[in-house]
Image (tube, rainbow, N blue to C red):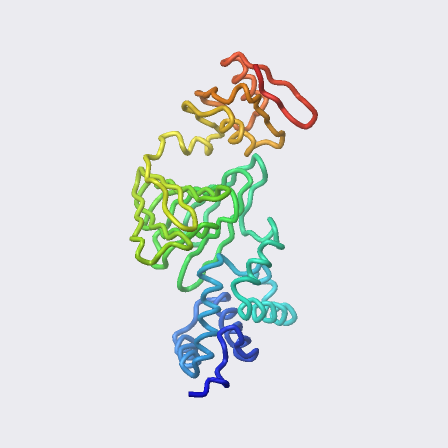
Amino acid sequence: MNNASATPDDAIAQPVLAQAASWLMLMQEAPLLPAQQLELERWRLASEEHERAWKRAQRLLSRLGSLPPTLARPTLQRPSGRRAVLRGLVLLIGAAPLAWWGWRSQAGRFASDYQTAVGERKHARLADGTQIILNTDSALALLFDSAQRLLHLRRGEVYIVTAADPRPLRVQTLQGQLLALGTRFSVRQLADETLLEVHEGAVQVRPESASPAAGENIIRAGQQVRFSRERMGRIEEVRDTSLAWQRGLLVADDMPLQQWAQELMRYADPRLECDPALRELRVSGTFPVDDLPLALAMLAQTYGLQVRQAGGLVVISR
């Protein structure tokens, strides 16, 4: 058999990519009408290359969180804006997913639908009725279309109360994807892991690189888990005080001092540094996250410590 004329998966013809991009853009403007859905199905079945191009377009949605912010409705209402968006989508679909991740990293912190600054918290109600609370220094991008509700947590932490909707609600992080099963839950993006806490209902976890035979990974109310791209961590009990940040509090229960300092630094710009001699010190108590001087004064008074300014650092020592 001669395969010399076969088109490899990474070399889809530009006109076909443009057609897939046009369908993708149309879906972002409004749910497809029944006649449009039939037309899309006919286009996909017309050739194997059409189907491969559409699968790439779908991967762009399901794996990567959301489309560029240039897909805002005011941009699409301008002919020049539509042409620019279409050209961008053709490039992204043709090179997905690598080019998309490159674009995301260049876009930085400005490519999110919701974000908070250091020390800020924000409550919002989404278009479907889902409620979110963003913790300090967080960013969340949204993709809602006729088939799904996808929240891409780019950094930080979000608390979610899902609304009833026939479309599945998923949360994408660097380590994998979460499927809400009618629930209240929080998701925190750590350096190399995702932390999930389920407060009501259940959430299904799918690590990015986990084997398909790894199981359902259902985390239920009262449970929490950390997971990496490759595997699930141990399922543990959620602490009653884990959502104290919503009230502006950090509740420490036998917490290592270094961890205490790292938690406080999430809410304030000054960098805290602990004397190595305090490595074994563990902290308990309730501290305000919005008033760092007061939190440090409470720590110093309770544990007989000294807090001093040293250049751009705040040093905690005996």
